[in-house]
Each structure stands twice: as C-alpha cells, then as structure tokens.
Amino acid sequence: MDWRAYWRFRGPVDTTKSNMGQFGLRYRLSKRYSLTVGYRHISKLKDDERELAHRFYSSFSARKNWKPFSFSYRLRFQREGESGGGESNYEIRNRLKARWALGKSIRPFISSDLIAAEDKGGWDMDALRMSAGFELPLGPHELALGYRQVYPLRQSDDPLKHIVLSAYSYQW
Image 1 (cartoon, one colour):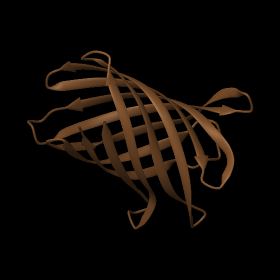
Image 2 (image 1 turned 60 degrees about the vertical axis):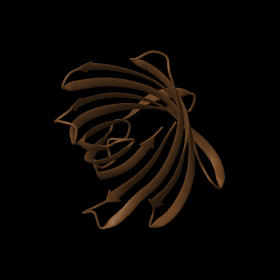
Image 3 (image 1 turned 30 degrees about the vertical axis):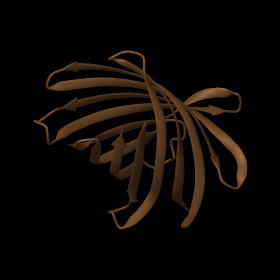
C-alpha cells in the first residue's frame, strides 16, 4: 500500500495549481513487475476557481536495476470525473523513468510520459510530459521536487505548460 500527496504550482511558484491525495494498493507479481489500483482526489485551479475531481486508475509497472541506475516503465489506464458530475475522461499513460542513486540520500530522475485520451469514440495522442528532479528517500517516506514541461499534441494552439512539482509519499 502507498499513500502520496502532491502539490503543483502555476506560474513563478506563487499560486497553487493543484493539490492531490492518492491511495493505492500494489501487488508485486515478481521482483520486477507489479500491478496497482488506486484512487486520487484532486483539487485544481481552473479559471481562477477551485474544482474537485476523482481519478481511478490501474497500472502495470516494470523495473530494471543496473546499479547505481534504475529504469522503469509504467502503463496506466485511468478515468477522471469532476465532483459535480459531467462526463468522465479516459486516458492511457505510458511513462519511462530513469533514476540515479547518489548514495542513500538523493536520487536524481528524468521521465517522459506519452498520454493518449479518448475523444469521440477514438483514441488520440494528447500530450507529452518531460520531467526532471530528485527524490529524497527517508525510510518508508519520500520527498520529491521537480520540474515538468507538458507539450500538447492534439491542439496546436495550446500553450506549453511549465509545472513545478513537489510530492510526499509513504509506503508500507
């Protein structure tokens, strides 16, 4: 089981873009492979107003360690809907991530997510996310800080998004 909290910023880190709490159950198929199901509660800023959303997801993950590096792949299917009802949106996310263990106190990482979204009965490539940052393992706890760029693939008039990431997680 794991519990995570995320805090993302908009602009020059002066406004909170979103807060998220997440709870998941993981089943390890082997040392390298695992399945996860979970729920994320999201409070996000949209048009200068807070909106609440719920996300349910299932994931398959694979990991390979070549010390001091580790590489992982995650395939995730998710459904997200707003609290007030309305239509749910469905996404498939593919993430590749590389970490470098610099001793036991810090792990720099880079990752890339390719996101496909359902649109009018079909699936379209929606966005490419590129992230870099570092994780600080503290026993069963972990802190992470990073920077992310989101490149829209479907709508060419969408602006490139810059996101500052912070996260806390606890696994048991």
